[in-house]
Length: 230
Image (cartoon, rainbow, N blue to C red; front, top):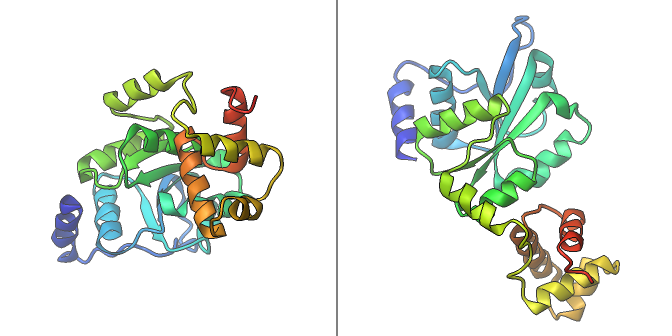
């Protein structure tokens, strides 16, 4: 964060301003373009400036409105967004050509479990939001070219966890999976386990993350493969 703040200070004096839309009238076309989504303020400006200085074309979007226009001027796009925007981005991409779009996820937790969850979403890059600017640009450049770079410690942890999916789940979490597999809704689970629906959704989200997946369907598939539903 400090590096991003300093980067912004250095460039405001020369009039840098992140674009919030892509100009299509000029006829310019990009072979590769990084698009920051759902990232605001100093962080977005600093990162966008750093990418531009590294010779990487980028722009900042606040939502899905300009995404179609972006795809119209670039051959390949890397969407960069915080983990809290995952569901929104999935919705935006539902009707778009995914072969032209890759994603990079900014995670607030740099634990192996967070990396595993990020990779399970299909992201080409999983990057700690607190990473130094130089490291972040290098990681984004790799993701832009469909190369995933992970810390050695994370790779070792993921390797150790292979084949042990769900080993650390509690009895109640296993019952939740069984109930979901039986077709029960989140509302029914909430009533059965004396929770609000909102709390139940949060608990299930944490469960999915521990399984290294992003949604109910993927969780049930992972649970079945791990023998948790027998």
